[in-house]
Structures are given as structure tokens and as C-alpha cells.
Image (tube, rainbow, N blue to C red; front, side, top):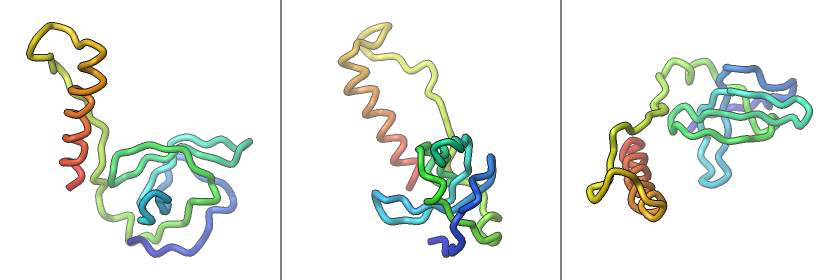
Length: 113
């Protein structure tokens, strides 16, 4: 999706946008660096169009062409509030592991369509 050629060899810059190829699906993603670790040459990135966070090697980042910086980010962090189980006041561990997690995952997928 994002043609990019220059490898980020000098180190990642905090809050700067880059391109990163997701190894799970082979797709290029726009990312923003949120934390750097110079000793391990790694960084934490936020996927701008997906809303996910992960740790990657600085060498996996690529310079992003300016024309791809003009589109707004489609991913964002959100929180669910006042969500209570139908059959009680608190969530049991079983509910957290199955029902609540499924609700969050379903809405996550819908938000990415």
C-alpha cells in the first residue's frame, strides 16, 4: 500500500510517522513511533490505521513518502464504560475470558471495516 524505499538506519524519531510491513499479513502500515529503546534498536509503534501497538526493530521501519502523511489516521484508542453483565453487577473471570472479550473483539473488527 505504501511504497517506501529508505530504511530507517539512523534510529527512530519519537512521534514521527513511518511505514512498517506487518509480517502477519504482508501489508504495509502507517505507524507512529511512541517509544524507543536505543540499546536494543527497537521501538514501540502505534499502527495509525488499525489502532494496535507493537514492538518492532528500528531496521523494519521505512521512511514514509510525504503524500501518505496527509490522510488522517483511522485507528484510535477507545474505552468501553458502564458495560455490565446482564446477570450480575460484576464480571466473573469466565465472563471476562469469553463474553466480554468477544464483545471487544467484535467491535474492534467492525471498527476496521
